[in-house]
Length: 110
Image 1 (cartoon, helix red, strand yellow):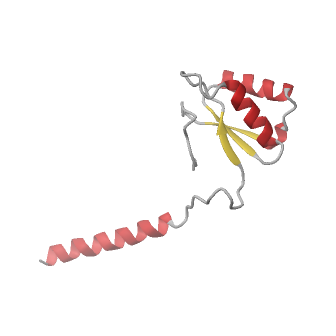
Image 2 (cartoon, one colour):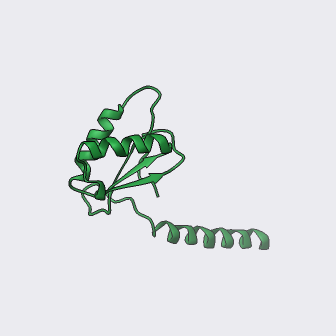
């Protein structure tokens, strides 16, 4: 019985610490102020959304807000950067972030 009580106390302390750590991170709703909007420019094998649609979105967003663009392929990123420059996108508002993530269906990266 003595050991069971000890295990329960350790578990309670551990859970309390995890809750405190979790409170440090939040996922604010879309209407709250935010640092940037995240999107991506990666190859999708099924072709949707298309590169054209992604470039249109990134260019439109960069006019109004800092836009972080996730990519996983340096060559594709250079193509995207060149095409955004040709469209007259606000390149100062775009930050390219290399992540080993192959799909555009990513949300709220930490």
